[in-house]
Image 1 (cartoon, rainbow, N blue to C red):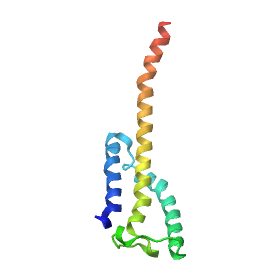
Image 2 (image 1 turned 90 degrees about the vertical axis):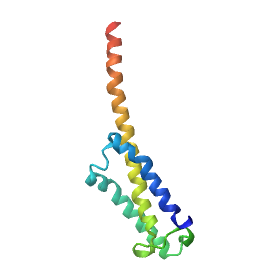
Image 3 (image 1 turned 60 degrees about the vertical axis):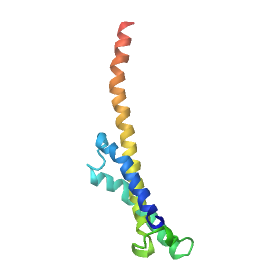
Image 4 (image 1 turned 180 degrees about the vertical axis):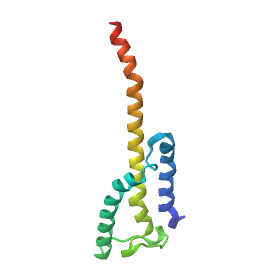
Length: 118
């Protein structure tokens, strides 16, 4: 399972957060906005990875990657990491924001009624 672990973990991240989209987070429904949030940061970290790999600062154990590489020797798993994890983070943030807004809309009328009675 070693070579597939990285991809399996990324797949699990997507599966765990997918219900948040179905619950109304609306992240995947706004792809341009998502790309503007994720791609600049992913590009910066991929550049950092490329420089570090070229300088011999770090590398990736072949036992834990599939062997498919993007340009500059960056494993495809690493490229996906810099996309999948931020997307899951944005999904989680949007779901928390959605839940907070929903709770405020539910609680505010209760608080308003309580103030009127006094």
